[in-house]
Amino acid sequence: MATSEKPLKTWGVIIQMKYRTLGKTGLKVSLLSLGSGGTRQLGQDSQMDQKSQTILVHKALSLGINMIDTSAQYGNSEAILGTALNGIKRDRYLLCTKWYCSNKPDPIKSPKLLIKSVETSLSKLNTDYIDIMMFHGPLANEYGRILDSCYPILNSLKEKGKIRFIGLSTRFKEDHAQLVAELAVKNNPELFDVIMLKYGILNQYAATTIMPLAIKHNIGIMNMAVIREKLPNKDLLEKLIKKWKNEGLISKDGLKDKNPLDWLIKDDVDSIISAGYKFAADHPAVSTVITGTADIKHLESNINALSKPVLKSHDSIKLKNLFGEIIEYA
Image (cartoon, rainbow, N blue to C red; front, side):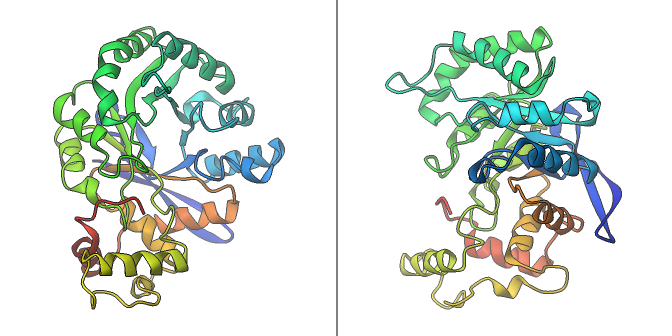
């Protein structure tokens, strides 16, 4: 995975934006991507106005971010981005959006709706093509039907130039082991260009099988929700560590009961959040880490954390020994 850098100056501090190659796509992507999902959804949770949202997007681009992640499921995010990006040269940014294929009681929506979803996304995003189109969070028991009935449609849209690359994202809250991604990289690596999954300090299981196979087959990895949701919350983190100790998942004396991960804060690691971003980027399979902040200072802080995207080697090893085999959404 090739890496390059672009120096940027903000608040009087030089920030180095790094770029990596997104697997077989060959795309050079910023190590930090701007996400429009999660709880913030480009500030939709706090009724941020379009002007402020546009300022946020433009700031992200000026800081060197070139990958923007969205979905038809993220409220009005696609339309917000379409407005914010109006007038900006299309080669300055990359767009990843998704189609949520599950539909109760029928497990998979009609494949015809996929065509409509892509056309709607193109219109809202104000673009002629989508760089990466993903199946949004299918579960393992839905995977076969997606391949049979939905993938051919997405592939035909790729042939028509409506989309450039095909991927899928995991639904980690329900599928803690992210088995759908394992099915994709094990059984059909030639079909998928990009996988979006969750890998972080408290959620490392993807590194056991999925990520090594992604490297083997040159499938790009976009890493999402790396901080969400217990890591930055002191009370939730302490409760989780206590729970894992009681369940025998980590040793009783492996970590302190209070502030269990504060030993990570030192040198260029100024917070648990900073440690979380560094750890999430410090895997050879990861091409980009998605941040869902709607706050410019937080955005700059996250970019700064990834200007040196590694923890101390012994700290990283300790985290892997502590949490590497745990399969639980955290």
